[in-house]
Image (cartoon, rainbow, N blue to C red; front, side):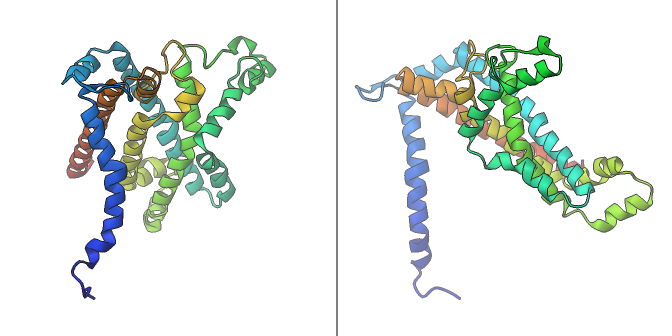
Length: 291
């Protein structure tokens, strides 16, 4: 049925467009504008051209933060996506599993700040659950200052992220496995395929698109990570867990460098967009080759 007034569709869409423009587009435009200035947020704004971007290109701390986030993404691809895929395979192969799914998914529903505070007690070197468990098992020599050692801090944060989001990816993959035709699985079983062979050779290839989406979510989500790092380590110790988002917040709100922080935000946004575009092209190429 056509609307009587040709303007009706535009009037219905106008509130959403206005909110999007005010909450998303306007801040993006202002951020790009601020990136060409030297400004502390309250004083005089001085135009400096590309100086902030030149500074970002030579900033060793910023470069190190990107290396840290890449390490974090690599760890979460294993701890979140791979573990989630394996868990989904287990619960799909076994009848029932409702309470198992609920238990694994529950951490996703917790506020990330609450998760970070809880795990800060787990990692506490004096009375933390992890060191206490190691001591009870006769492995006191393995007790460690997990968040205070540059060698283990990034991995410790990644483990927390994996504990939270493995259940999220498990549900994505489980839903995808439910769409695999039952007759295909039964035919493979009649041919003598075991559960591991079914999982590796039948089920996973048939949910390839879900795997692509999960990996993309994990990669882009890694670049957006902030709250876990901020609460657990705040970039420490000695910058070992400094990632672009925590460095950006410190630059703007602690150092008062709004212009340089805006340039960092623009650089981060461009990198995430480029990663998304490259990933989409790789996905199309893989689908075209039938892999």
